[in-house]
Amino acid sequence: MKRLLSIFLAILCLQSCYSQNQPSKKTNMDQSKKNTHPNYSHTDSSKLALTNTEWKNLLSPEVYAIAREKGTERPFTSPFETSKKLGTYYCAACGNPLFKSNAKFDSGCGWPSFFEPITKSSILYLPDNTLGMKRTEVECGRCKAHLGHVFEDGPPPTGLRYCINGVVLDFEEKK
Image (cartoon, rainbow, N blue to C red; front, side, top):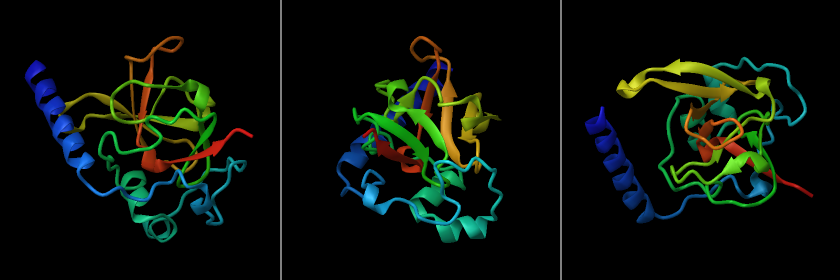
């Protein structure tokens, strides 16, 4: 297990070095580019059940690859990872409120990290045994977009670390 962890950490390090030498991509930090499709809402909590074709037509390729195909963005590439702004993080696919900024912390893992969701129904939990690891995948409670994983190595009061792909987050700054 220690050898597998060492290999995984080495891969993360290489990905980080690689990503630092790549041109920066547009991010969803720019709120003028906010999602405007008809199912996107910060207040509608009705469940969404769209086909993959419908999602592909609504989402950017980057968001689709992570949200619908369970991809992972390169570590240390999301501007949300180090952001200290106050506000609310939403699902970039449907607009569902996911996390408050006061639940965000610097875990050093390379992805935005939170210790609790806004509500219990904001997030769905699924077993994930891929890559030879036992993990818990987290999905959006409204549209089932893949967000990332939750681990039991976070800070008090929950002891949890929601490790979330920044590509699948939208942010609205507190006014």
